[in-house]
Amino acid sequence: MSSCEADLDQLEQYSRRTNLRFFGIPESEKGEDTTGKLLSIVNETMGVTPPIVSADEVTSHRLRRRMPGADAETRPRPVIVKFATADMRDVGIRARRRLRESGVGPTVYVNEDLTRRRDETTEEVKKNQ
Image (cartoon, rainbow, N blue to C red; front, top):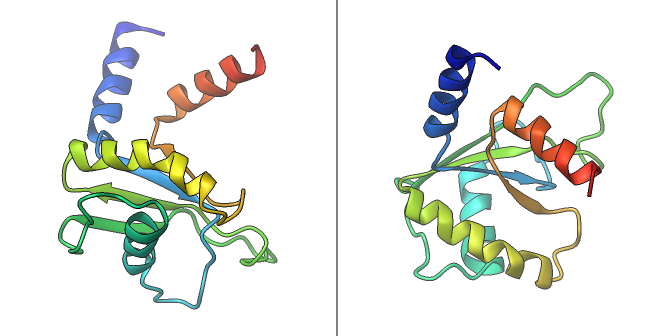
């Protein structure tokens, strides 16, 4: 990787420092309130303290377009969540263990929002362990 590519990757990752990706959250019709769903999951299921009470502190949307013929029930699109501060995002990272323990199921999980290059590197490391 050249120095320019590394710098670009660093800048892109820095812009994602307040983001998390949620996978497995069921989809509803067009115009769904993803932020409301996320606030419910983060506050109630994950037990974030203090609770996030305002949509001003969090914004969210689905990633990617739905593929033709894709079943929204069996494979919902991921949701990207942008927190107001990196500290709020870190609270979400620490609380994701409670999400697994809550019994919501193995289908809902949370990851950091990594650049494509860093995501590929992470996957490669996981395969080699």
